[in-house]
Length: 456
Image 1 (cartoon, helix red, strand yellow):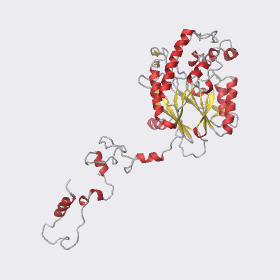
Image 2 (tube, one colour):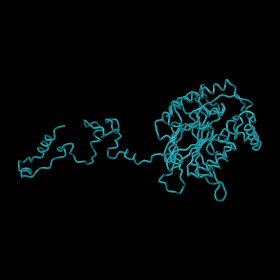
Image 3 (cartoon, one colour):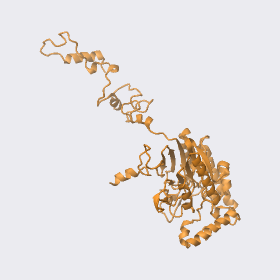
Image 4 (tube, one colour):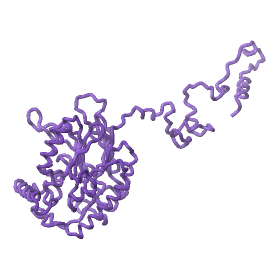
């Protein structure tokens, strides 16, 4: 570009009077310099359709500074059309006003790692179990969780970390075990568990705890040994832990009651056999066979009493509660036979405590969402309860090259389950209906509004 003085002379000469008469300048008046004659650093800060920022983006200005365009602190990239936070009209300026979560939780379900080939269900074409890929998928998910830093309060495994091996007869009227799993099968299951333990040990930050729900496939090894190996608090299958900002996490064990997963010859196994036998006789055989699957289970009397006590204590402490389990705790959140056997009594207990906000589960690989019907003022079951029941899609059955996990963001008035890969994203209100919170209720699934618009 020409110097400012030279540009001013050009501007003056172009304004000369062609007739030779005295012009305004000759009469002693000082001519107003044109915009091109003003030094670049003194140009008026007026918006224009050909602003400096737009010319920088098109590569028309040399020596463009890093603060004019692109990411803050980086040199401008002509191929980047995102203004920095310093640019007028930048959407990044809204980020400082956007609500930040109180904390986040990493979630994954049904990794089911085992060292064997993929398997496609003959009865359900397209549903492929990619066993060996689970270890790498989990490592990638944990790496994503680790990037969240201190905001990540914990990671929750919703069960079935391994696939496991067994030799029991699931086709029996009352499936049960008469002895321990053979040693050669148990050794193979332990080897697979050690592979996944190593993935977790390498992938999680030292300050981020990992809590494990016990799944039915995990029970191909003794339940107590699995909990001890994975490092659950007090080596327990069900427990509670404190979360930041007045929240609490309760982890439940839905493999109880099933005689296949109890110690052979124990009182718990006898009670489980009686439960299955009685339930099938009451339902008339085939109907209950669809509900009481041999790979299901529920909460025993002691655990159910513990749950009620924990919820009472949380209410007294004015805490909000998140519940995690392997099987869904409401029949509305899973396909028939894939929720906990005693889901109705469990959900009734959960709905009676206002502190419970959301229940997370795995087990049913396609995933799901539901809310339980509760009695209204007239005693009729026509009203949905407050608790959200979310079932995550299985990491095991994500498409080739894909994955499935979620980051749960907890806010004052809502919980956002931000799904990755095949996992569905959901936005869940946790405050009472009818109370202004500043949070719009667009539906329980984040894509609902878009789906409705597209359908029109």
